[in-house]
Image (cartoon, rainbow over all chains, first blue to last red; front, side, top):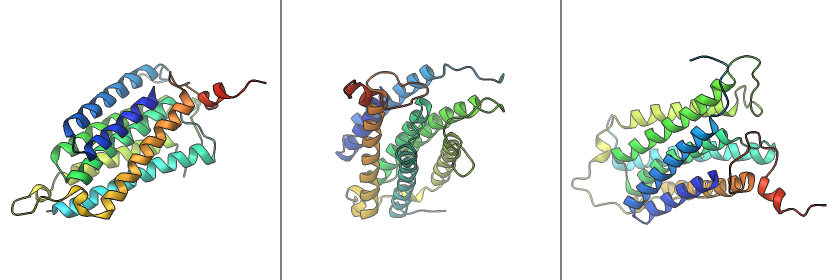
Length: 51
Length: 192
């Protein structure tokens, strides 16, 4: 799944190169949103400190 | 401090090369020292690629405040992930992940790098002169220069290589917390 996120960022860069800026920004936002989802998913281990 | 659009584009291309160097170092550690990245490590790489996207926009189309904003958002994402991983191992006796490099683990280096990205981007935003286009011929993509083109090509290559590497390591599903081998390659290998 993380592979998909890298692929999405690659796609966003290529869209930016072809001057499709709105789709490029949309793909960037989608990939970053999915990145946050996976960050939350992988924050399963509890910390040894109390914040 | 007043930067011209051309100088700013070159500085962004150099920043892009610096991000490429970070990603290349991570690949070197993965391939030469067989140190497979954990899920949080992959998300930190993702943060660097996301920062690279903002730098790519500046390199291709010239500097814009919104491109810097994307870099700041991406660096905040990356510094959150690396900070979380530092906190996991901050108490003595709670272990670490991977081998240290020059005395620090890669997630600590990532935290330092994302901090530098935030600082560098804020400093770049101080210059208004880089956005001035009055009286200038609209520049071609990459400003017609080789350095931004080369940096962009390297960034796209490294982002695509990370996609392939993550697919081989994790397969299409969820990555293991402590990966020991390339999951997709192991599944494809004939069982004896």
